Image (cartoon, rainbow, N blue to C red; front, side, top):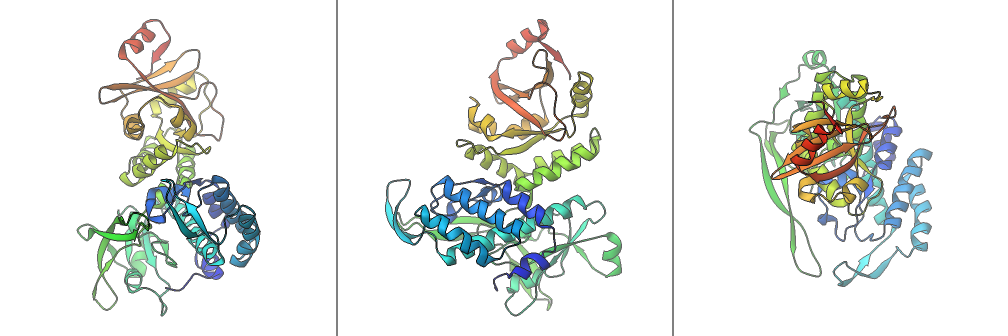
Length: 428
């Protein structure tokens, strides 16, 4: 497949660069030795470059990507500006490098070709995450999404087979085929109204009964000989000639934009515009509880051992909670609850329990108002444990998500005592 040109990234994707910039700026970092060690959920929220074992190197690469977008630069500009920075830090050329387990090997670090791969992969993902965000926000008026391939001599047959296919925006298949779904993928989506679908005589398809899974080898660890594998979702379809084609994304691309940090802002915007409307908050909750999104949350929890100032949406306030908090003087604006990696890192609660937080917050045992801190406290059950999830106390600032300040393990006896002594008031 042809490598996307600057025109591909700007004209074909046809979106404002601000969304792509925000996507990159919101990304954290994940240190990895081999690219196949990182799953799609981590890729969606963290910049990762194989054998870039220092956070400052990853920071330099992300800053260069953002700066290049802001300046409207080209691939050559990106390479020319970043190379001396990486050379000064010793991350350039072929070197003997030591792996986390103490083993050593000769590896290619920075190079013009490597920077090209980093640039193309991240630009594709950034632009298409922005396109997805725009399409998602317009889904009520444009509920049908059409897959569009470039359709030239180098388009992969499986990508060409999807050209012109239309699925509803909420068809699960978009979690796996959303472009870019492979290296140098130049495909995109076009949102359509119901009237446009009828006018153009298009057929809205469903992926029900047409998906499967396949396990593929992604590489071999040079030091251990271990064969790495990934399980990918496939789609059975037909090309324009009626031939059966099985589509599957490339390894590392079997993810969904709903896992990205940019999606947090989309959800916030949705909740902000319709604060207190149960239907709107319910839609946000559905996204947060989606299994694909849950994988991204688990990856976020796993990465929180090294906080980077990142946050992720984890729940929504019930309209009852919003009304009660507002009556106490809290100035809520969105009703989307988020957690920072620092709060997760500092919590004494087991990581396995923190990974369940979105589901637990959706069904709390009770919701309290804590006097003194003037904050909402969600009491949730996780197995035999009782957890108290405290939101940030005091007045909630406009334009900010309602952040979790603390997650601790408590006893129901202590909660009952707090209610009896007037420390807590029960909201529901």
